[in-house]
Length: 362
Image (tube, rainbow, N blue to C red; front, top):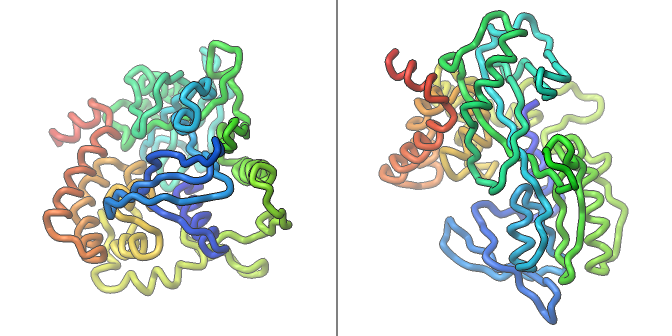
């Protein structure tokens, strides 16, 4: 399962159905008429321009940051979320014997542990740590890393150490608050609510229920905006990249785009971005041209899984990626250098100190 590719294909499906998507645009404020939300003030970070967009309904679907948007609408809005941090380690495939996943439903302290073959590596997770203030780049704690290494060692072919970690990353779950002290008792289900001013908020939930979340949210938006409902076709709508019902699925994560991508990956663009990563330079061009990638981080963290598969290899690939991006986006050498530095700073956070020190000596 490549969640980054699923997001991209969902976005491209939405565009094909008439949606307008924008990237690197942030919410500055909500607009209101007679106390009812009727739009938003947005700042385009790429062009450094502010825009006012009007809408009959505004939906707040910002995950762990939903409370922040709710307080733009209502400064006294009560806290809805209790975010929980989940940490994952990525190891070489050789640590797991065979191709089967391992699920431990309850560790010594009652947590769930899994070891999954993932994109040619082994994914080890997870933790469940309460977080007071959500951040864009949550950082794994040393005790979380130690917990995963200790418990995973019981089921792996050999004991892993910090030096074996190819990448370590954390995600935040937008758990809906409940009358419980620990996050394990908080709701994993999604919630849709409407403020006094008509802001529709959806939060909670998980990947496996994303379409049901969208359906419930749109149903609520129809009521709030007094919209004319039509039967939705999306319950049977193939996502972008999916072949016809009788056609075989093309190999690779790009689906029916594979042939067009291969046509771009010619000459030097057929070269890998790094010997240790399964991506070609042409995929960088593709991401910029068709998938709204604007930075090295976009390519290595969100259009591919390079940063999560091997953080050091991703660092080493950054200059080549920046060069291709600069050419496609018509940026200069200084921009490319700044992109590389910014990505290197980011990628260092995906290697634990022990692994980084060992690799720097090798």
